[in-house]
Picture (tube, rainbow over the protein chains, first blue to last red):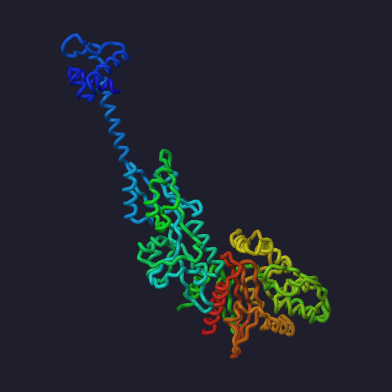
Amino acid sequence: MGACRVFAHVGERGSFTLGAAAAGVPQPVASRRIAALERHLGGLLFDRSGRRAALTPFGRDLLPSAKRLVELADALEYDAGQAKLKPLAFAVPAICPVRPLAVLDAAARDLGMVLGFRHADPAARTELLNAHEVRLALVAVPPSEATWAIPLGVGDAAGTDRRPLNIEALRPWRAQRTFQRIWIQPEDDLPHIRDHLEQLGHRAALLPAQITLAPSLTAAVSETLRAGALLLCSLAQADELGLSWRALVGEPVARGYQLRAGSGVDVRAVSEGLREPIARCLGVPVGERGRP
Amino acid sequence: MSVQQAVQELQGMLKDAGLVGSYLVRDLDTGDELGIAPDLELPIASLVKVPLAVAVSEHVQDGRIDAAAVIEVSPGRITTPGPVGLSRFRHPAWIAVEDLLYLSTAMSDSGATDALFSLVPPAEVNRVLERAGIAGIAVRHSMDELTQTPVERFEPGEVHLAQSLAIGSRTAGRGHPVPQLDVSRANTGTARACVDLLQALWVPTRVPAAVAAQVRSLMGLNVIRHRLAPDFSSDASRWSSKTGTLLNLRHEIGVVEHDDGSRYAVAALTESTVPAAIQPTAEVVMAHVARTLHDRLRAR
């Protein structure tokens, strides 16, 4: 390829000196490459008898093809550069706030990646990855298998009590006709969170309606603000939503995340390189962000 | 609030508590009724002990059975929580028929019930019901079959699995792989049929008066009073009833007799969708719904 480039430049300019300079190589290198190309093609390209480097008829015949080859090579390199700038589609939980995501993107650029975020609920993230619509996804997994684990507690609007909440404390008294609900947001509509919490509720003799799945996070927060309900969320999320947060006694439920990738992405390297900024996006408690 | 709205509100309340309910309250003097899905057919569990008491009492009255006859009852040796009395006994006992009737009806002792079923089999109980003009209660088996449910096969810590199995497996036409919950194989009834039975006992026309009086008195002695009793009994009102509990089924039927002479028959049959064995909140909601229906009917 390098020889073709020199051939095109020298052929255009009729001078080894000028051609070599245009191709960005020293003149002896240019001469060696031309000689090699002549051997490869089986004929002389230049008539070296005169002062100028005149093309032989063979060289004249081949020059247009050599020029096209050089143009194509340039186009290939340009496209390669553009492709590197194209964002890597990355499915992230819908609950990830903007600033930590922007910080994550900045950290990824330092590693030579541009990330394009797609917000989606847990099931949709897996589907996007399987359908090759994204190349990276933060997939929800049980905390025992997770790279990132976030304990869940409850957020409430009134917020004076910061002590851990025992779920059994929500059981209505015999004469009580109203009850306090815990809303589960779509991000936590997963067997290891939803079913586990419901089972704890059943065991503690809560009404089944006391642990309810919300159609959206907004609806759940609205109930929390309006009706004094509790929102199942992480500490970071409660802070973001302006709710006060209480842990659950025994930390019975937690979110868990793992990075999964389509072919051609080194998931381990990305996972290691971006562990801290991803932890921040997911709301991993401060002390545990560096935890392997 | 209209009756429709009130009923809808009550249904919402049942749903919040994870219950599907079949209710009927009837004023025994005027015949006025208020209910929620009163014709839903459900397995009746221990409620079957009421028709059995009627049948046995009838046999005693017409001399076919001697009330004082002593019967040997083999011990039930059940260890899972719930069953009481003879069903938990570890050694044989000798008990008179009349006392078995008390144990079976007032204490819901299934060991006593089965001893009585051996004297008056299910088919005979059905004939007695038919003669009394009560349709809609089917008696198909004795109690020992009721105690062989999935609960008895799981470890105590895994009761919720038996409950989940009971809840999740209902098939089309109200069938169920657990025979005790299959309305085509279990002892079954509806809230309406139960109220008919109560009416036949409190306003006897076809049931002999002495028989009705005896069963009423036994139901008045019911010792299981955590379900509807707290909402129906007071010094000014007398609550006589029978409960029935099996896996996710919680029932109670009874009559409340007020000081002013008014009498209401109440049937509350429920099926829970919550896989937990102990559900005090469900019991409270269940009673609240029955009481609200009663109060609305009484206020008419």
